[in-house]
Image (cartoon, rainbow, N blue to C red; front, side, top):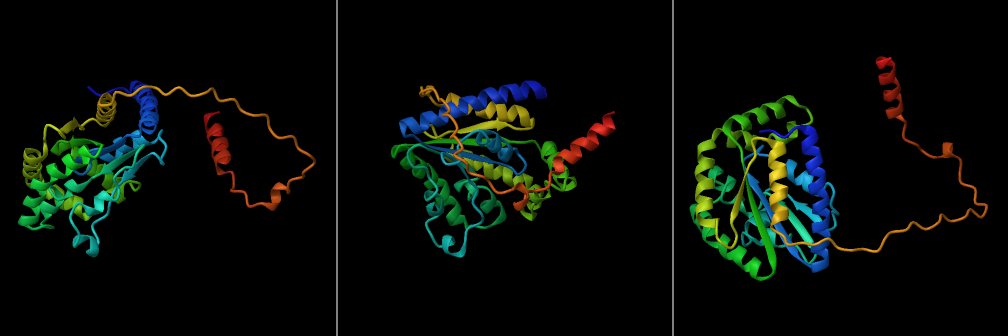
Length: 270
C-alpha cells in the first residue's frame, strides 16, 4: 500500500533526523561506512540516495557515481578505480552503482571478457572480506523494479524535459535485454550474496515506500547513540563603530523574479 504524501513526509523527516544522529556517531566513533546501491535503470536508487544525503554534511557523507572507465583505468586492476573512493575514518560513502558494474552492464553489454567476468565473481567476495577486515562496514542494496513500473518511469522520463537526461542509449539497450539482466543479477547473487556481506533487496515499485524501507533498514544496521553537544548560544552582534556600507545600487543584485510571480499568482486568486 502506497504511503500518503503527508505520512511519507512526516516519516521521512523523522528518519532524516536519525540519519544526522548516525552521521555524528560515525564521526565520533571514527567509523568507515560504504553503502552500495545497485538495481535496474529507473529502479529508484538515485531518489533514495538524494533523500539520504539532503540533510547530511557532504564533507562526511559523499556520493560516488563513476563514469565509464578511461583507457588508463581499463588497464588497471579492476577494483583500483573504486579503492581511491573508499572512506577514511568518520566518513560515509554512497556508491550509486559500484564495482558490480562488471557483473551487470559489462556482462550483458559485452564490455568485458568471460575471463574478466568470472574472475570478478570469484574476487568480489574476497575483496569485500578484505575491506571488512580492515574496518570498513559495507551495506549492499539491490533495488528491484517490475517490468511494468520500469516502462512507466521510462515513459515519464521521455515526456519530462527535466528528466530526459536520465534516459541514455544504454538504458534503452538494457530495456531490450531485460531477461539477460535478470540472469546476470541471479548469477551475481549466487556468488556475492555472502553471510559476511549480504545483499538486501528493496521492492522499489512504490518510490515512497522504497525510500522509507531502505533508510529504516540502513539505520537498523548501526547501534548508534545520539551525541551530546554543548548548548549553542549565539553571540551578540558586533556594534557598528561608524562604518558606512556601499549603496545597494552599486552592486549587481539578481532581479527579484519570485516576488513578481507571487504578485501575479495573488491576482489570479483574487
